[in-house]
Structures are given as structure tokens and as C-alpha cells.
Image (tube, rainbow, N blue to C red; front, side):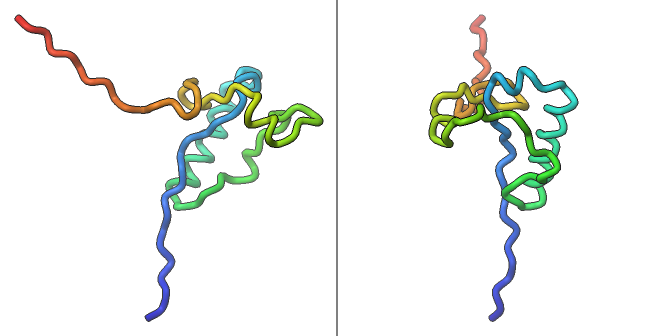
Length: 95
């Protein structure tokens, strides 16, 4: 039996350092989010290289420094990366 290529689901979350997100225009942020969602919906893991973000890492910073010392936020929502996305239950008022 031949192996079939199974379409995998990529992640739709786009996280960047907060300082970089603040310096980006709304159009730039939307382009990065759209590219990531497009890649995820087609089963790819990485977004298009056309949407690469320049200047996100400070010159001379090691990769470990970049991940540990930056304040990472979700570009689409503005919330910290790794934050829970659990939906809150609506409280029912007692009468």
C-alpha cells in the first residue's frame, strides 16, 4: 500500500516581540496574519517568505536572548503569546 500524503494543520498563531508589533503599520500586521492563516489552512507549517518581518531581532542578540528576553505578543489579538484562549462562561443571573 502506497503512503498517502496527509494534509496537516499548521498553527494560525503569529507571535512577534511587542516592540516590533507596535512599530508595524496596520497593513503590515494584517499581511503577516493573513499569510500565516493561509499557510495553516493549506496544511503548511511555515508562512510565505514574502511576509518575513525585518528588524524584529536586535543586532548581536543570540536566538536564546531573543526568545527569552523579549515580550512576545500575538499579532492578531495583542494578547501575550502562550496565554490561554479558553472561553469564559457567561454567568447566569439569578432572579
